[in-house]
Length: 452
Image 1: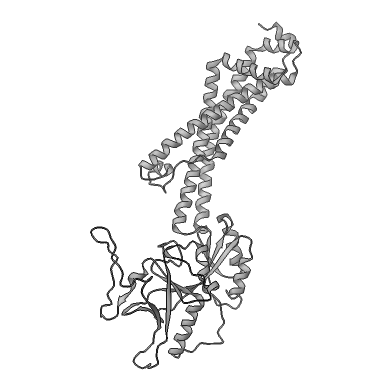
Image 2 (image 1 turned 90 degrees about the vertical axis):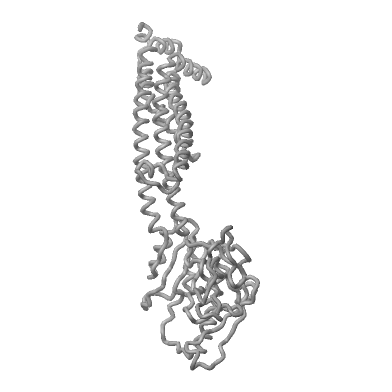
């Protein structure tokens, strides 16, 4: 029997019993819908959770804190950073040096800034997601110049008038038209310099060193970063250390040369993918350093979301199991009704495998059609869920069902889920039809012909 003939026979037999076929297909549709919708809700919850965590911080960044001066712990210096960067999953490292408060003052005429100052290697900032609203990142290594400065988005408003006793500042309060007032200093145009502060200006008569600096840009506000660029300024690492040395000289601060150099106090490590964060973080902890990343928050939430997906998918699978029983029942009933037809096929010389194939085709077709219709209806249900979620202010449907607002997602049906659902429904049909097909081929030809 040719494949074309088997296909024609399969479709003819299904359409002869339209109502029974339709009811069986509907069982598969309901089961497929249940699986796809349930899994899509789980995927939606997982995605919105990751988006919420991403707003709190970069999921691929590990913070290293070097607060322990134990002799067993190696110094967190450039050599150690090179070792860490040799890991195949590490894309970049960025040490951070926090300037001591009160050692330097940034000035522009009579206006001064004495807020938070961080020392970094400017070439690393872009790799860690820092962005600028104005200007460009300075290439300090290529140019050889180190007196560049980057201002946080709100740092210019921390300049105050030194000629007034109350150290007044411009308040970041928009006017009636929504326009923000200008700060005292236009950091991109006005002349800037750094002055080394004296611990006791009354007794210290030395001339305070002054260094000219250039503003390279203004950084975009981002509270998820650590250090945050919002109220801070960034200087070149080596330049900030040089300023600290000048401060020590000006104020006769003695540095204990016998004290162990523990290296950088803080280092950021950029990993290529969040799935490798835990592995890299474990290696870094092995050196004795304290670390922090979003992995400690993400992993429990991801495990919870995976458990929810399994539960939701299991509920859908139960529906599809019921549909499988329906397919088996339909095919067994079909065998009873077509016993004489099976006998005639055997007498005419049809091969056993062809008879089995016809019945498996019928069962597989029921599963395939049910899978396609189920996926189509799942898209409609997903659209309705997303529309309700958007109208409810972005809460995911799980949060809505539990009486909460959720994180802001709902239902996601990726392409792999579509293919997987159709393939699974078809496979369920084939498996359900396997027993009836074997039963059909075992029927005696003579007995079948005598059957009325």
